[in-house]
Every structure is written in structure tokens, then in C-alpha cells.
Image 1 (cartoon, chains in turn brown, orange):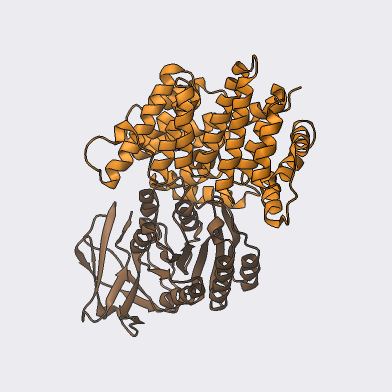
Image 2 (image 1 turned 90 degrees about the horizontal axis):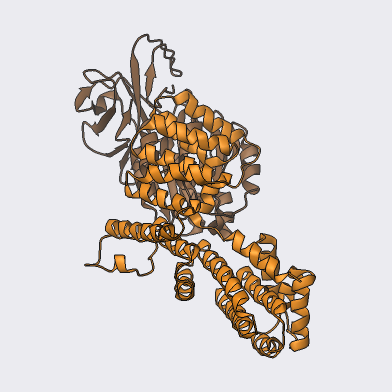
Length: 276
Length: 345
């Protein structure tokens, strides 16, 4: 199930699997959440284990799906000059390992960016296309991270699969047109979860992944990229997709969403809200 | 400067084995090769010579040369310095010092002063822009101060000084000291950023007082004012559109007008301005991204997504003037003037 604004579905909604549901004249909101205890995902939770408020108004969680819907994953990879050499080799290997870990019904796309943003491979189930494109990457030029994230979010097909952007960068943005606020506004209108892996520090990635209900991992060495890419995918598999029909709240504007566990034994990570 | 030159020279420098000492005759041959033969070959040849040999040969050779050859020598060392800036920056300084020695020699020739000044002015413009566009702002500032000591009222040099401040602000780098930034206590980072932008604006205003028709200076002033939240930014950018002859400047003026409107959250106006930029650069990336974001903010999601798909489908994307604006660019006009002068007979 995928959404008009990323998180809001209007009328004539089709949900598959586990079953097909048709609804008319209602809107449904999906919130993708991660529940962790320490470094381990908490599994086996059901709708009644969650409390959810939309703009402070308590909502009824209608369904919880985990690990059933396929993924649409967009790899958004920095290929600027600073990647040149061993780091690029490690990045390619990490991308290959990530691609190999996808399931049969998952789809993946590859976006690379320096100052120029390139859709190297559109969304496909053909793993070989992604692997082949990865081996042809060259590193050069400055870094347009914010523009690339905006581009990748807007390319998301918003179909029934869950969307994940995995962003990698090793430096600060040097040449984007868009401001941080502009990109974060777009994130608020999208339903995609954004995870990031970085080498070095970049405060924008923290704000980006927080706004998109995802996580940022910092690699301490280039050799760690492979492990972190795979961990990001594992984390996505262990997430829950909560569905509810908003009641008692205005339809327009920003909706602050808060998700908690009733028993409180676990840390919930979810996007802070959505825009309408 | 063609990138191929840079790579070729760097490759030669890295691969050079034992260099053979060269005398003034060989040096004269290299300058002549630069002047009327293959400039790249001349640059490669001098790149292989030990620095001490070049210094000595140059001094002896320069004593008896006519002005034309001295200018060729200036540009031979300048282009070599530019070519190795990425890999051997300290050697760039040595090459530029050689160029300056030759400029001094030119100024000492009978009737050579005027020509030396004309060459020196363009040389400074090029060298400052070379360092600025390579994010070596301290070096750029050093040459800018030196240049303004000699040509205090040259609006292009004053503009280049403003660019150094603007780039410092864009890249959160430490700006060169300026009177307006040294007042009061050490500021926090937001204030510091604001003061750096103000220092840039101040230089641009000074340049425009000398020459009010420099559209590129007004373009920079307009964009700095947008970032300062100054309501007069739009007036500057509209004036640029009235004055500018070249498409690059007009394209950027439309883009910046879009940025100004977007900051006011006037998304309709922003979309119009970005669309005008898009019309001028159909294969530039930035208008696609900017317009897509604004259309999304206007609630026109289908249009926003169509723009991104259109960008993704482009066979090639042209070099976007926004990139060279934001990162700095070399003064091509000054470089071409200098090259023409060096090859003049």
C-alpha cells in the first residue's frame, strides 16, 4: 500500500497482502516504526501493543504488518571526488552485498551523485543490473547531497511496497541548491523511511533520518561499510507498519505523530509526523 | 584552463625521473615553444626541470628579452602553476613568483610600464580567481590584498575580494579578516556567517560605486542579499535581468529570484522564476530540482514527480552555472586576454 502524500491514502484503497481490503471515502495513514531493545529488534508485537496519537489525539491502530510487504529500496550513493580509491572499492562491495541480501519480490534502484545526480538504474527486480552499475561507478566532483535526496524521494513510485532510501555519504554537502529545510519539508510529505551510512560527520543526515523515522550509522573505517549496509536492510525487515484512520483531527497541515509501546519495554523510532 | 593540461602535467611531474639541468638557451626554447608552438609541450618541459635551474636560467634570460617574450614567460609559469595547484600547491607559489619576477622585468623596459600594468592587472584577476575556485581562500586573499595595493579602484579586483568572503560564507570557512568583521566580541557561528555575508556585500557595493553596470557584481550582491533576508535583493536581481547580456547571468538571476520567492514562501512566484531559469537552461539540473520542490510545496505532486522523472531521463546534463557560481570559477576572460597577449607577435 503506498500513498498519495507518502503516508496518506485516499479512497478506493487496495491492501495486499495479507488480504485485499477496499475502503471508500476514508483516508488511512501508515507509519513505519522500528522497535529495539538495546541493539536487538523486538519482534512479535501486535496492534494492541502500540499506542498512537495524531496531533495529540489518541488513535486506534488498525493493523500491524511486519516483514511481509516487499521493499522498494533506493541506494543513494555519494560518488564525489573524496571517494576516489579504496573507499570507492569498499562502497561498491557494500552495495553488492546489500543487493545480494534483497529478497525475490523486493525492488531496488541506484542513484549516484556528485554535483550531478544520476539515476543509474531505475527501480528493478534485476539484481544483476544494480551489481553491474555499481562496478562502473567513478568518483569525481563535489557533493550535492540534499538535491540528491530530494530527487530520490520524488522518484519513489508510491506503490504497495514499503519504501526505503539508503543514503551514503562521506562528506559535507558542497553544491546543492536546496536548503536543509526544503528537503526536510519534502521528507514530511513522503512516507519513505530513510537510513543513512556515513563516514565522517554530517549533522544534516541526523536530522534527515530522524524526520524520516530512520537511523544513521557512522562507519569507523571503510571496511565497515558492507556490514552497515546489510544492518540497515536487516533493521528495515524488522520494522512494523502501523495503519490507522485519523479521527478527531483536522485534515490539513502538519500532523505530529507519537508512537509508544503500552508495556514500555523497547525504544520506538518513527517519523515525527507527516504533512498534508 | 583545460583539464587535460592539468592531468598531463601532473602525470609528467609524478613520472619524472632524473631531471637534466637546463640552461638559459633551453629556457628560451621553452618560452618560444609556449609562445608560438605547442604551449602544453612547453609547460610539460619546464615542469620537469629542477626549481633552482629554472630560477637561474630565468634571471639570465630575462635581462635581454623584449616585452612580448617576457609576457610569454609570465604565462608559461602561470599556467604551469595553475596546472599543479591540486597536487603541488607550494610549487604553484614558486611558479607564480617566477611570473611576477618577469612582470617586474617587463615594467623596467623602456615604455614597458603601461603594458606591464595591463598584464599585471589581468594576471591578478586570474590568479585570485584560480585560488578562490580551488577553495584556497587564504592564498586568494593574499593576492587580492597585494593587487588592491597596486590597483585600489579596480572594480573587478574589489569584486574578487567580495567573492572570497561569499565563498567563505557558503563553505563555512574562516574568512579573511576585514574591518567590518573585527568589531566587537567574537561572534557565534550564525553571527559570524552574517558578518561574512555583510563583508561580501560591502565589497560588491564598493565595486558597483565605481562601475554600476557590472551585471555580474550586482548578481552576486543580489544573491548575498537573498541570503541575508534583505528585501532589496529582488531589485538587484531585476536590474541584472535588465543589464545582463549573457545567458549565464540571466539564468542565475532567474534562479536567485526563485530562491528569494521561495524563502518568502511565495511558491507561485518561485515556480515562475524557476521556470524562467529552466527555459534558459533546459538541460541544467538545478531548475528541475528547484521547481520540483516548489511544485510539491504548492500541492502539485504529480507535476513535481514528472519533473524529476524528466531529469532522470535526460541523456546528459549540461554543466550547471549554479555549480561554478557556488564553488567559484576562474576568470576565463582574464585568462584568455593573457593568453592572447602572450601569443601576440
